[in-house]
Length: 279
Image (cartoon, rainbow, N blue to C red):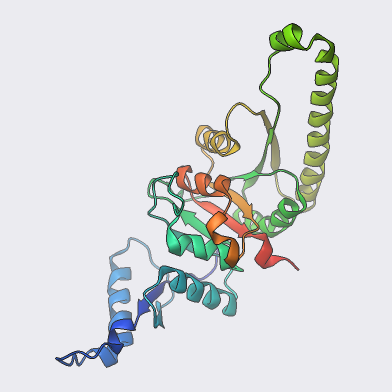
């Protein structure tokens, strides 16, 4: 889809090679060659072609966190434009619900990461991208990173925003705070206008890059991650793009919104770490 070479990476731990075995294993010294052969054999079974030869990265640790950090380091050194990975986690209430590998990869990678949950469906052509945003500075920076990717795909962007309001009905206002109805409506209108103004700036930014975009705003009636996933599912979006500002030390508190979207999304999710790409 991106018209660029793809290199499979095989992460392999050498930790067991340091164990003083009673019976020597002659293939321990040829571990890298064996791993390369195994990776090549696996790739031949896939219904796709055109991959670069698999790269075997040997690491001294079996830790998923360490493996992820090594992969992120390799991607940055070799100027990769994307990292593709998957997460096997399925429970959103688990505090480590993306698993050590995916969680660490998102937190430390300077390269945008595309994650797939176990139920995500990949399309042969990405024609639409959903970009949930709060119009923050971090979100604008992420949009700048996203532009060349979307342009190369020839896709359009749905700029998605949830307008937050107190869940209070006019009936309740009339009964309990009758004098505040006008103020509430004024505040509501102000918030909507501010969001619309910010959206127009985002749309102009995309238009300059010759990227088709559609602004979508929904009033808050459920958590934003659920509304975003619902929109993606109903509109058959092919890719969801998110931004996070998490670093290595904030891995444990990676935003719940990002985590839930990744786990529930019906399609791949592109995660851009603003902290690691900040200039």
